[in-house]
Length: 231
Image 1 (cartoon, rainbow, N blue to C red):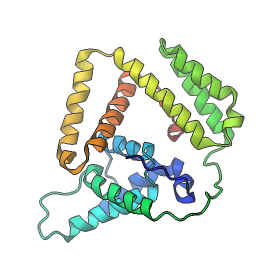
Image 2: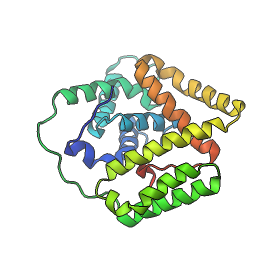
Image 3: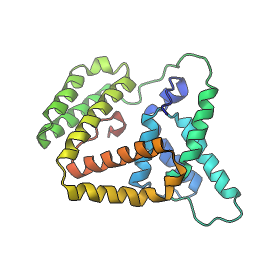
């Protein structure tokens, strides 16, 4: 299921998505120093890519914790966002049915033009240095050449960069050894096991792809292109 939202709530929070989800989960759990796992970050990315509004994620987290706290017997603590996945999607579906029929609100760019330019330039140079990713580097270069034009619609620019990331991940995966890919798959299965029963097949498929792509980027030393990773 893809939830495409274009109202002010979603677009206004687009580039603070990861940070706000992380901080909200930490507050809900009551442990500010709790670190999200690679699986947690991958799950946030699947929500973001599916167009799940930030507000739905935050409300879903709250509902999951409220349900957990209402239990008389708590056999385990909530140690990952996977526990909240079902509540998040249910909240998103309710919001989709009750969206106001009003136009999108204007929002200020979350970072200056020079930060976007520097991010793209850094990514292009890293891809050129990595070797074998000339096509991806050229794609980033084309976006960089028209960065002033793309700055008017950063969400569209991010979608273009995410498409390039998908091509980059597919190429990088073919260059990894069978042993490295098996190791990633085993780590995924270990982290995902507690949450499989709480997610739909579509959610699991998206999460597996996001998690493995992240691991491929790390293993191959490749840059993240999305604007979510502007330093």
